[in-house]
Image (cartoon, rainbow, N blue to C red; front, side, top):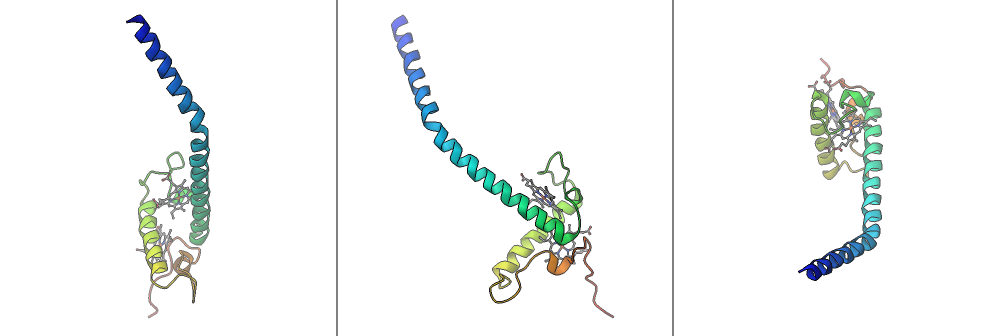
Length: 117
Ligand code: HEC
Ligand code: HEC
């Protein structure tokens, strides 16, 4: 019994050793992907902030960037989908303008959208 136990502890250690030995490559890869997507998000966020002439806190609780509590967060999420749909339907910048927030917002949170009288 004792011998069996020792043996299985040894095998467990061996297996763990392999996991530790093999994991750094995988870890580096996913860390890099994560960093890329974080940089991508930060870039996009800076861009929409400029296009709306606002700041991060208009839409975010800076202690929890995932929070959807602020009304502007929800509206922005819808308008992001709108911009994505426009890009997918011709406004892709290839033969004309590329859709973005600025095309309507003109660096203002509330874009001047009323029809002239
Ligand atoms: C006009 C509203 C708006 C502004 C301004 C804005 N954001 Fe965002 N942000 C959003 C929305 C909406 C999402 C969610 C996007 C999604 O789920 O696809 C988001 C997502 C994020 C996320 C990812 C959160 C997660 O899910 O992990 C981060 C980080 C972030 N924003 C940071 C910022 C920073 C930093 C600024 C200022 C430079 C900023 N945002 C400005 C609306 C905004
Ligand atoms: C096709 C035009 C159009 C585009 C493109 C557009 N918006 Fe809007 N957005 C509007 C209009 C119009 C309003 C005002 C709606 C209202 O007052 O009910 C508005 C309102 C908003 C508001 C609420 C402002 C407030 O306080 O009332 C937010 C936040 C917003 N947009 C975010 C965005 C973001 C982020 C993008 C780019 C991803 C974007 N919008 C792209 C037309 C647009």
